[in-house]
Length: 270
Image (tube, rainbow, N blue to C red; front, side, top):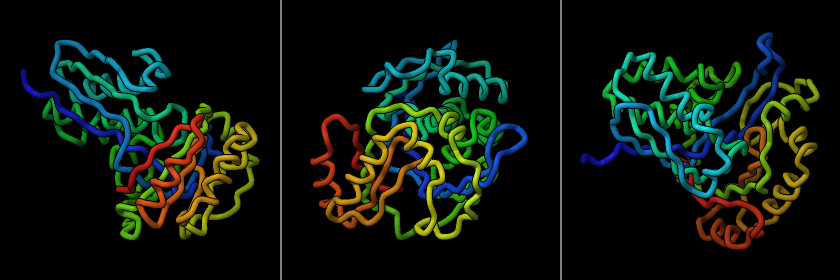
């Protein structure tokens, strides 16, 4: 038996996220800077007669049922788009918390598209066609490289962030799931202006997310006082927050002191 094909679904970060207004289709116009970590969920796949999904890992029990999971949806959509007659046995190692503002299902869906494109030896353009149908973040996660997002987040312009490549980063989640729809629904509707330099920007979803999950403010306050911390912000619609550090040692020291009830990931930016 051949070795299974493998892919990483790296954790996605919004270094800044400006909400500019609501669209006629119910989604929102945003301006954001996407960045990705070196660690995330893991996927593997082997050829099979049918499409089959299994899962393991600390957050496998929080996943939707197989038919509703974005991995299954991505596999079925790619199979139909490329008119593939083969199936695949897919395994997802779910290391990242769900509904946490760091890609989650979108990153898993995108990794599935890359994985099956390789396994089935099909044109990568099929994956690019399918990605926007699966969610606004899926095209960015398919790229998994720094990019500026506009529109609903799916209008991408690749960018260079050389100062951040390999930067030590710590992600923390208070183990509270947050509904993206609920956070956008709690946004006050005020357009506070366009996104320029991401460090001078903001996350417009932070205030509504805090109103739903007060623990986010506690996490950000904790990150802000860690030695060696250079920058801290909430990612996406929350509740995961992140901090960039001036050294791997400072990041690791902070990671060692994270309250035990919080989830943490000490990693690097790609």
